[in-house]
Length: 468
Image (cartoon, rainbow, N blue to C red):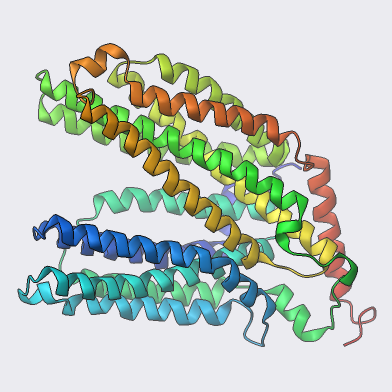
């Protein structure tokens, strides 16, 4: 498939723009308000045990939501109404999130009451409600993607714009001062605007319309759980390999650069230069991610998503070899630029993989189960991202315990924690590359599934063929 419309055609698709912009305003505004709230709480000097209890409870809540996701997704997928399968959840949760953020202004410490347990209690209530709302919103928002955008061109364009806005959000999140007055009001207004834009112009549910207008019988002989789908199981295994390796590489290099800056500061480098190098690493990585994203979009058309992902993994393996033998801050910053572009590519192609697997299930069962698939994927991703974070944290804690972090000793022995992260990450990338060959989803197979979905949709909307 060729990119006949060109990159800038993305910005002429009103449905796509509304979908991406509406979702961005809701999620970005909520994250900004959350960051401000936690930063403000920690700056008040609460005892460490209060913060630990708060973090533990919030972590339990997060895992509870992830476990709930597949069951919630299954229930949402099975319902339909004149208002759509997703629209009502998007409306209710976005409005709820907007009003929940307004309650930040009545937290006890806003009135000078600094009791740690009282503040932690109210903070958990607000963050728990906000996290639940964002979780339900995100599940339904992500589930729209495979249903609304059904060709590779549409999906690649949509995924590109969503990820562009996410990267811009990362940059803005670092630039926007969190201590500005009336931040809860500003973020709530942005959420309401985003909700309106999304629901008014960015939601289309063709499958819900089919369910309302026509009697679609499932394929009883082939009905089974999504976890019994060999293609989906293979995708989950591949996702685990790439999620763990991506986080190992990202965290390993980030810690490596931070420790290099500490070491250089110990050896007399000015604080201004330290700040400049830190900013260069962060902003350069984000900008490189934007540039690479345009390229990955083009590759998805010319080579297909399977070959495109293979290309990303090959380049990543080469970068890992270079990363293991690099020792100075400047090579580390350059590596961070390229690595972020590659990690963006892995995320880009994985979502395109998931979308076509959902289509494959639809072809076999005659039921679309977007939220069910995404709920399971989010659970797997969340669990393994957390486990990987704990692993890399313990590696650096081990190094810090023996005095190897940010010291000349670490410099001389070659940054053991970074090397461990890169070597393990490289092994997982290599396994993922080899395993990818086993997944029967070549460019030709992708086009076949896409054509079948188009034909099924045409037949379902033909009143002469389907009786009401």
